[in-house]
Image 1 (cartoon, chains in turn purple, cyan):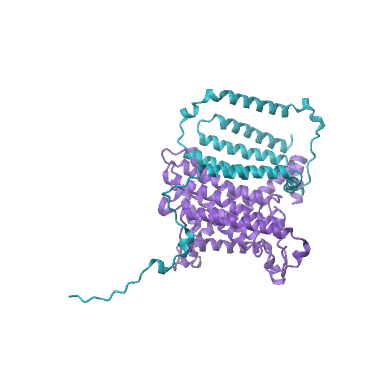
Image 2: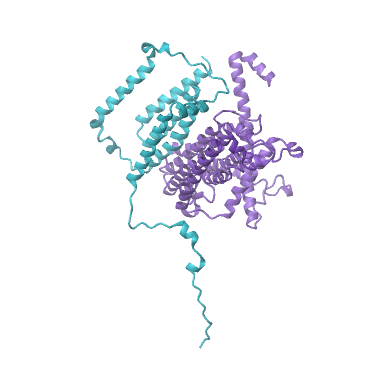
Length: 365
Length: 201
C-alpha cells in the first residue's frame, strides 16, 4: 500500500497524488464490496427458490448447471436468469414519463448499495469508519422509497400507482419503529459508530450480545426490516393477487431486474445490520480457542446467512397481511413497545451504580 | 484550489440550479424531486462544514420522511395549472415582502465584512475523533434544554391539532376489532348439529 501511494505521489505531485491514491484505493474497496454483494444477491434468489421448494416438498431449480457437471444442477440458474434479463427489451409504456420511468430503478438501487459504505466486516475492514454510521444507514435506507414512488407514478398505470402508495405509507410507518429500536442499541453502546457498537458487545460469550438485553427490540427490528424491504408477509406493495405486481408491473428486462437487485440487496443489508447490532457482528459466539481461530468476517457471514434464512422462512410460512393489519402492527403495537422500552432502558441506565451492580446476573448495564 | 473547494463549487452549483428549478418547472412532481435534490446537495455542503449530524439528519428527516409525504400528496392531486395561477397578483405583495427580507438577510451574511465579521474568527477544523453528534447532544440537553423542550412541546401540540382537525367520528363506520377476533373460540361460531342419516323412501 505504502509503495503504491509513493508512486502516485511521484507521478502526480504531493497533493493530487495522495488524493488520487485515496480515490483509487476507495474505488477498489467499493468494487470489492459491490461485486460479492451482487453475486450474493444472485445466489440469494437461488437459495430462496431452493429453500422454499424444500419447505413445500418440491425440488426447485434443477436444470441449469455449469458445463454439464451433474452435482451442480441448478447452480447455473441465477446466471442464466441474469443473462436472460439482459437480453430483454425495456418497454416504456405509452403515456409514461420516460425520464422518471428510467430514473426510478436507479434511485432504488443507489441507496441500497450506498448504505454498505459504513458496514464493518471485521475490526479493520470498513470502507468509511464514520462517527455517525448508524444515522447514515437510517438516512440511506429511508431514501430507497423514492424509486418505488416514482416508478409507480411514472408508469402511468393504476395498479403501479396503488402499489407505490401502499409502499410509501408502509415504509414511512415502519421506519419509525425501526429507528426507535436502533435508539435502544445506541443507548446501550453509547455510540453511533457501527464498529463501536460491535465492540460494545465484546465479552466472554454470546450472552453479551445486545440480543439478550434488547430481545424485544431485536424482534421489532427484524419484523420492521421485513416490512421495510417489502417482503412477504408485508408485500402488499407487490400483491400479485390484487394489484398484479404493484409498482413494477410495467417494467421489463434490466429495469425490472434492477428493482429485484435492490430488494434483495436491501434484504442482505437488513440481515447484516441485525447481525451487527444484535448478534455481535464479527465476534465469535464464545471467546475461546476453537471459535477464535475462525476469522471475524466468516462469523459475520454466518450470522447474515442465519438471518436471511428467517426472511425466506417467513415467506414460505405466512400468508400476506391485510393492509389495515400492517398499519395497526406498525403504529399501535411496535411504536408503543419501543417507546416504553426506551424509557425503561434510560431509567435503568440512570440508576446509581450501587443499585445497578446489585442486580443478579447483570453483565450488561 | 484544493479538492474541498472543487466539491464546494460542484455542490453549490447543483444546489442553486435545483433550487431555481423548484420554482420554475411546470410539473409539480419535478418540482418536488428537485427540492429533494436541493436538500441532498445542501447536506453535502453541511458535511464540508463538518456538521455531519445535521447533514445526515437533514437527509433523514426532510428527504426520508417529509418529502416522501409531499410527493405522496402531490401525486394524488389533480393538478390544474390555471387554478394554481389564479391568486397570483393578489398574493404578489406578500411574496415580494418576504423575498425582500430574505434578500436582505442573505446579503447581510454575504457582506459580513461590513458588519464586523473579523470579530468572529474562522473556526479551526476539528480532529478526526471529534464527535459532532455528542457535542450537539450535550449542548441541547444542558445549555439549551428549555428551548429544546419548548420546541418539542410545540411540535407535539401541532401534531395533536392536526389530528384533531381531521378526526371525524362516523356513525356508519365499521372496523374489525383484532383482539375480539383473536379471542373468538370455536364454540362462539360453530354449532354442531347431529343429524341421523335418513333412509331413502
